[in-house]
Image (cartoon, rainbow, N blue to C red; front, side, top):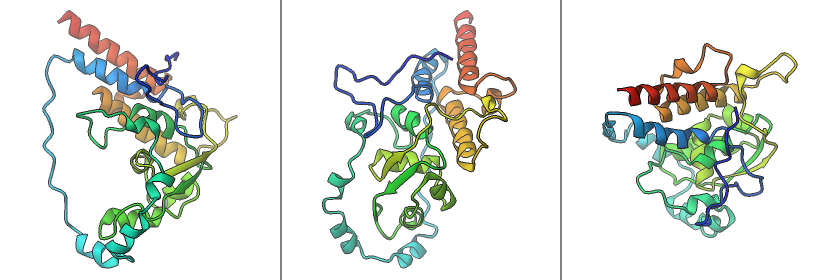
Length: 241
């Protein structure tokens, strides 16, 4: 599938390439741009989801398990934002975008990580007294993506943490995101990281384009190609209606 690059620096000065790396391939990030176009073709507006109240289950246990006080943590944060900056593209404001609707550049970058990709986590990035702090303190010991997965973090955690400057990535990276449908016996065996990223990416692809996840499979086509064909078919039906 020939997809044009989406992440060139714009006239507004938007820098898309993650620090220390070359231009990310647009294979993964293409889905967000397509989602916007697809949404404009849908005849009915999608109802805005009502956010559920945040669960307080386990909050007391998390607070009791904290190994540093809030004051100690705040002291530790001094100067950390400068040493652990967010990606340049995160300085571009995108009003109305939710915190878990990750940027095109983030999708394009994280989907190229491998089991052996070396990473560094910012020490004690999340405030003590929360469940997320306990999880982070556990998986932040990881030195590779494979270790991070084994210690309980997932692609959505990697996106969240990367966009906030909590992860530095030292490589290596794939040239393009993993596509299991194109994997052959001559290729290196698939790792747990490969399979987790592939499943997560396709679920995000289906969600962003308003497709059924299962419809992306069943053919020899790459899922991104299958997704764009399904969107094109939907747009054609909408025009006929």
